[in-house]
Image 1 (cartoon, rainbow, N blue to C red):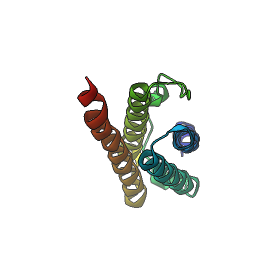
Image 2 (cartoon, rainbow, N blue to C red):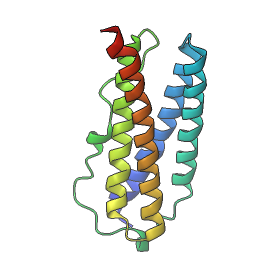
Image 3 (cartoon, one colour):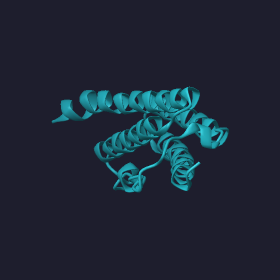
Image 4 (cartoon, one colour):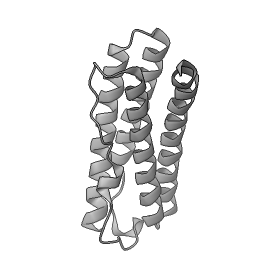
Length: 147
């Protein structure tokens, strides 16, 4: 397997653990019990994503030739979570993080030549899209109604 793919997968594992911490912090910091429950659920899902990635077979039979640029910077959120952030900023950050994760898994699925590995990345991408949709719905219900 290409070193680039291995680095991308290690990056993805790191980002999943960051997401776990992000959602656990948000669950702890929110005053809304309903959101705290959702954030804890998201943290557990992200923990599961990391476990799936850690168990992935990095064999050369699983990935095609990797482009020179894996676009790692494209998969990073611009801002870091801080407890004093506004609700609007938190939701915006969560959407950005989930979109970045979705895009990373879509790209890894495209590089996968093993159907099981491709399916794993497609499933992870779909789950991240669902997370993003959760925050977009929250944005629509909470942020847009306030304005």
